[in-house]
Amino acid sequence: MRHLFYCDTVGWLGSVGLLLPRLVMGIAFILHGWPKIQNPFEWMGPDASMPAILLALAALAEFGGGIALVLGLLTRLASLGIGAVMVVAIGVVHVPQGDPFVSKGGSSWELAAIYLACAILFLLLGPGRYSLDAVVFGQRKKEEPVKTEA
Image (tube, rainbow, N blue to C red; front, side):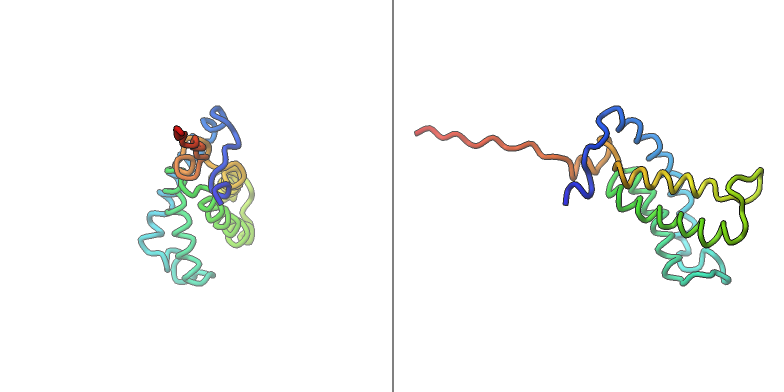
């Protein structure tokens, strides 16, 4: 079960490399999710094409997932939620509206694709050594057997 939440896949240098994008993405999702978590069932407005419960789950995935990424706690689970939100954003919002991948000033799905790629990165590699996942779920040192004198 521990390997589901943390396994050291990248070493210390790779962990440093994962730390910066994890913090930036986490802060971005906290800021994106904060207004949504204030009104979780109606943040898309009255014409939302999704059930209110899915809107609330998306708000939770963004805000809670952002906090989890910053802390490096339950990172893979948070990445799964954020990745799912980005797949829906691309497939239900951007592509059906005809948004291009990249646009000069208009709507595009470039940022959602970058967030999705980062979510997949954290899902596959985990948070790195500099995370609460490493503290909570990291390998425990094996205890030495107690020696008794006969």
